[in-house]
Length: 511
Image (cartoon, rainbow, N blue to C red):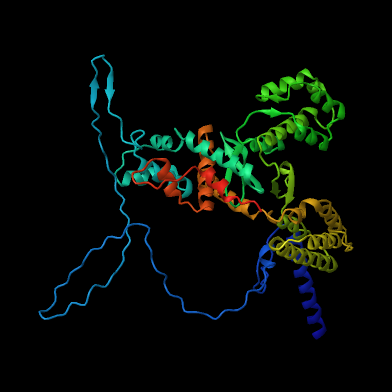
């Protein structure tokens, strides 16, 4: 009887393991595995252990209001003969939300010549809604991630007579200055930064699926929503608003690297014209040279256009010596390209292992990668040529090993082929090892997309991209978005905030 129970228990255990394996292969949720507490994520797991600290009693910190504190004496009736012992302060912060309406009686004069003169409106008044209301609307919609119906409901509840259409106009009409400033921020970042981190996510515009591309680093953030996420689109975004196509050494080098035939490159170089104002002029030039009639691989028109776009980027002094850090999406592979280590390790982590031997090999390789990643982090803090040589050799030992797990070995070979991009940090220590910054930046766009879906007009699309990017840039520069909007909208008593591109240029300090 005991033998039967033993066999039954063993069969149930095997059956349970098989069910979990089938669920895992189907992508279904299995039984939760309770693991001991430890740092999560590749970056956290490579942090050195912090020494234990003695627990200290926590006290409330000193409250320092950002506004002027008004003193008000509170009196109390006391018995005759009591002694006054001073005052005991009790700080209270409050918020006053109220609607006001002002009718400006503008003087109107007629000169002896018959010309009418009308008294100008006060500074900051642009339309029938004041600068404070406009600042509040922009702040709540873009940084507060509110919705248009909720804003309308709130404004009406405090006494503002406003419709949904009027509120929509406050969000999108006459915002060219903000869109232009966002463009200037991008140009400043591309001109001065030692690296940019890039990423993209899905977007909806005019009822169609599109893509929003993020470009930024520790000092700025910029968003651009387009219908495609191709390399042509990315190179176009890197021009930062310029529309020209340029044939120069950078353009020809790009064409050679992407296998455009030498005779075609020679035909382009033989022409006297090297700059083209817009896409129509460039495509007409290619048509005259017979590029559009060729049916070969790679597509001559596409490669030549990408090269001319890259030539334009370089001619405007954008990304001349900067690194482009990405998650290995092909469209971002331009210029000095670096890869994210977290995404590289994730490929190893996501491999399906079917035997204990395969799982052991996978765990071993992941441990080696994590250890190597920790050494790279230490190298960024204290780089040296000798350590760089050692790290290159260690990289080869990790990614050229053979584990007996065929799928894992193929993946390691593939990652080793990206050695130059994964080890870009050895030559340029300022380059981060991951794209966490991009993923953090683009999260606000994802939230906006979930809250308000897509955009309907080009102005709405451009305003959404501009304000989200400007708000992120303000956060990185330590500028309150409320103060920034007050300065731009000429709110009475506003703090003067210089154009953000000046702060971006000032943050960069050459090594």
